Length: 146
Image (tube, rainbow, N blue to C red; front, side, top):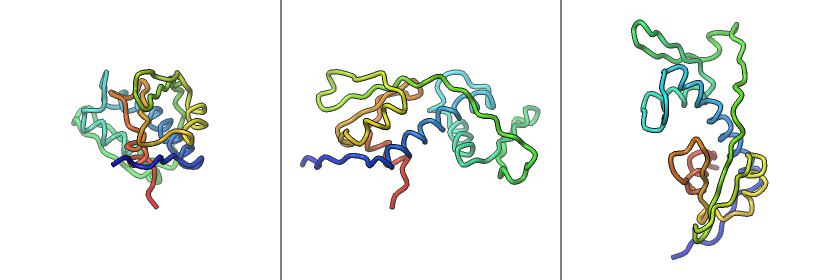
């Protein structure tokens, strides 16, 4: 049974692209905090630290005791957050037959294009991903359910 074409709304496309941007800003911080080089995807601690940062929590690392703890940002009101400069993402997508990748696109271009793409027939890839990700999987993972 083939699913009927379904596309993201403009609002969903915007939220998804904002989430991708936040994740990519978080990635270098996690690598710095945990002294990890390379892929973070398979590291459970890296995933946990990234989740806490994405929630807006503060991560404290004690290198002597080899411990990592998270705290609400309210606990440290004197901390001033600095944005992280990230390289502009080069995003690619494939649809249907998957014989030709389209791109590179930046996040703004992707956001404009997403409402035209079938979420069940589109796969996304950029530098931070290990593999092509189905758009419907990204929707389920990063967009709040009603």
